[in-house]
Length: 444
Image 1 (tube, rainbow, N blue to C red):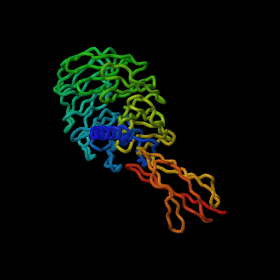
Image 2 (tube, helix red, strand yellow):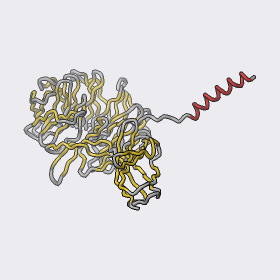
Image 3 (cartoon, rainbow, N blue to C red):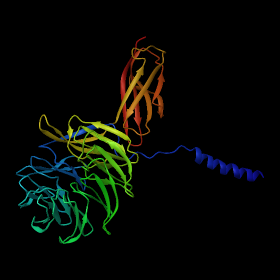
Image 4 (spheres, helix red, strand yellow):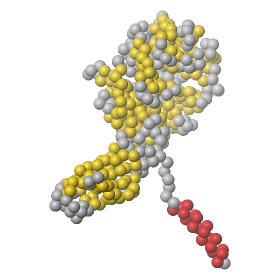
């Protein structure tokens, strides 16, 4: 009986330890607020809509004719390319080259080292972004043509005529090219430019659709958002928003996210199109949102970056710049890149933001203190996760620890002599470590 009781107690003890053992929380992923500006790269002109991140580099173009390539890790400028006229689209980055088009309807092919590769002149005004896929660049015109250019030479491989302007960029899925136009049609083409299927979209498509696995997500001019199964060419669902879709969409495993003209960021359930949550933006946004770990970042033509929880849409952070933001945010962990523009000075910049890691130390009562009178030290830390605090004093080169590492952010100190002390705190978590000191005079 005693042996059985011992076994029961041991088992219960193990279960109890499991139950009452404090849970270890994983270090947060994604962006952490508050943010602070780390660096700012001056750029010539206003960024055209998007920052494009490919293989650790960030590419962007401006209305002054410049294409920039930045190393995302070192934040150093890799190269700059200058066109003869202002550019009209973000760079499209392929396997071996990049391409942009300018206001003279000239398409520029650029090596990934930033050197000129070729130029192609089109007869009619270009209207869409450029899509890079395998060894082709695809772009559309206001006259309703989709052109496929050889990425190595710039030669027109084929062209396809639609009955509406091609303002949205095309997308690809396996060996198909998918194109939405202002005539309210979806065109499915082979890689050779042959029509495979044409569907009614319901209204004009002006924003580049999203391909996610075998699904196509797209918004139409009449304020509807659609999900299409590509292999069967069948619609899975359609939902109505209270505004026109303005931004390209992004998706995670459960939701698709986009901004509409009613200044709302929508998060739709991918399975049925129901609204999981929505959030009001400071103004209209044509910029693609950005996934950053468990959060989502959103910008609009304002000085504000919003950070929202991906599951519930609750605000998880907010950063206010002194200038208008002119691009999507790019999450290059652990930093964020955004383009800014000062209309008063007509100067642009690419800003690098990172989490602010700081520690402030306060004392009460304030100096001068008195011998034997209690002084309370309180630390305020930002940028840490489950931080630990160690408080100390220094005098004549000697350090005395008042409180060893603890989750408690305050401690008491009773000065024992008249002197000018240094009071300090060290704050650390699994990744960060910072300390600060202040001078405290004991006068009586």
